[in-house]
Length: 176
Image (cartoon, rainbow, N blue to C red):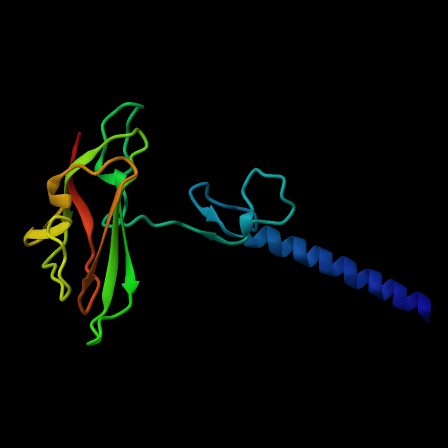
C-alpha cells in the first residue's frame, strides 16, 4: 500500500512539473521587450533564476519632462539649474492656506544665474511678499530676487497665502 502512495506522489510531482513548464513556454514567461522596464528587479540577460513576469512601459509626458542640460565642464548654466520646491505650511489665523517656496541655484559648475523669471499664472497672495524677493510683473511672468544674480548653491525662500498652490516653473534665466 505504501509503495502505491510513493508512486502516486512521484507521478503528481512529475505531472505538476511538466504542467508548469508547458504553461511557462506557452505563456511566454521570461520574454520581454528591451524597451520595457521590468518589475521585481529582474532583468533580461542577467543570471536571475526566476522568470521576468511583470513588465510595464514608462510613458514620458512632454509637458512635465525636465530637460537636462547638455554641456561640457565650464559651459554656461541652463534653466534646469534652478530648482523650485514648495509645500504647505501653517494656515493664516483666518484659515487661508499658506505655502513656502524655495528657489535654489543648483548649478554644478559654479555659475551665477540672474534675471530669473518664472511662469506663475495670475499669482497673488493674501500675505505680503517682499517684492525684492518675488513679484509678478504681468500674467505668467514673475521675477525672482529683483533680477539680481543668485549665487551657486544660493536659495531664496518666501511664503504666500492663497486658497490653492500655484504651479511655478522656470521660464527664463541669464547666465552670469
